[in-house]
Image (cartoon, rainbow, N blue to C red):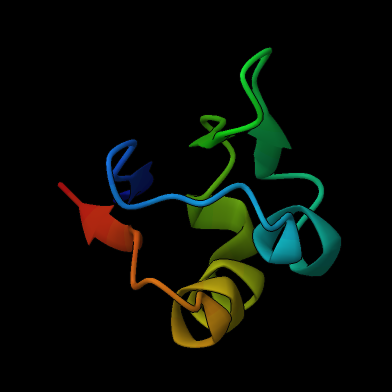
Length: 61
């Protein structure tokens, strides 16, 4: 599984990048995106999902 960030819902708060910096980065317009390292950082990704204020992060197959 990988993490997916809904670009429309993301407000670029950076919380996910603070929680899981090995998985999430902000792009040039300040929106988060997920790297392909989600599976090996599963607990941190789940913490970011739970903490996201706009519920923009989810798991995908």
